[in-house]
Length: 575
Image 1 (cartoon, helix red, strand yellow):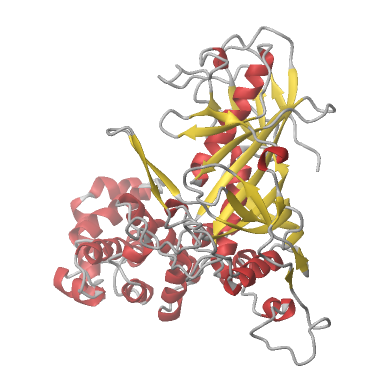
Image 2 (cartoon, rainbow, N blue to C red; image 1 turned 135 degrees about the vertical axis):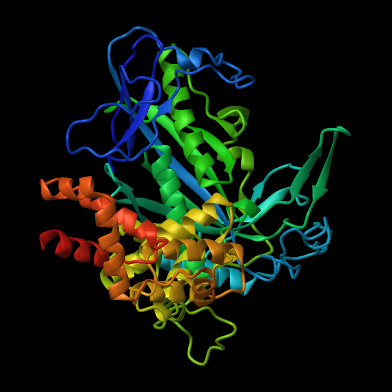
């Protein structure tokens, strides 16, 4: 896949980064806080420009390049750069026990309370492969269009970290369980984010491996504590080829993978709990030349930080090279408070890991319908075709169905899936209301989601239930209340759990006026009280009637339907 172009110009000391066609572009003359200009028809993926011409943050320095140097480019002619980004994504498998031991898997358990003899690497202990983890790997591989290897091997990858008691990790370096797949992801672009752009990242391989423990650093006591609860937990490592070229592309791909894993049930993929961690490999080069030296940014635990880290690192490498420096093959970390990447250590090569076959595990053999031995015990073998039949509906299919079934905009389908629990909420409302899907979509995405974000609540924590919202929309649909009254009712539902919309409408006297004669008298009174406005309407000012409508609504305490009011006023003005 050809790498998109990055254009680098130097207007003195000011730089701006904008995304175009899924890649980064550096241009001359983009002011602070402004997006760069584009030709008509070109879409901008990044909604906010990445501006490096700002005061460097305190403490954000590089061991080779002063932070100020990152912001100042030499006065040279235009250069074009291409950025290349590949990802290694580690997803914790949803399993009751660890990959090679019977220890339970539970987040936030007391330190070192879920550690078996094997997890602690006591002499004489042997690994026993967890069937559930293998099935999760096969299902994930099938969902990502991978070829499942019927024979895969386990290897030892040697580290010497305090939180890895054995001194090595059991992984699959030589022959992983799945290879050669693809991850299709989409993002909304354009002025109103209404243009859907589809992209594909190749999946190099998916492998099973162990997680390490945790090192907890106590700065006050100048000591490091080790928690082995996580040691030995099963991981899926999904390796994506370097087919991405900016932070937003990478973040979108990871979010799509996260949704797929959650739909499959193979991983909860909760980044806040460390169940999904990303390593990004980043390099830049001139188009037509060999790829540049890459750096790896480790352990990114949110999509937002992933995008920021990649965009920062692309800019850092370009400025380093423009200033005559060189890029080292190293491992870096992202400091989210300072907004920059910082060096950790030189990047290890394969020879440093001293890979060797795992002597305590035989080859992992899988079968399909054709190769399944006759009379084989289903509990003793794993059938790839049987797992294929169990694949659930994937997020891309769900989005397409939402657009077709409810006629919603593609960007709305993305939002429904991206917010955990929001799609289920929407579907439950649709089951209980007679309102049009468009109106339900608007209330769920604008009103409900707005309240949730304002108070930083998850969908599951919403005080307004799907049934309550459905009842409210039914009242609105049969014109029992006005739109403004419906918003008042929603606010009351948000504040007062337990009350139904009908009860709130009755208590607050928010019902629409059904007495046509009384409404006509109010309209007549308003017209007599404001003769100048009436004259303006008759002189041909179309906006003047809106003032009359507002006055009538005020007199009815917003209990009258504006459409009905307008009809009555127009009839009286014409007579």
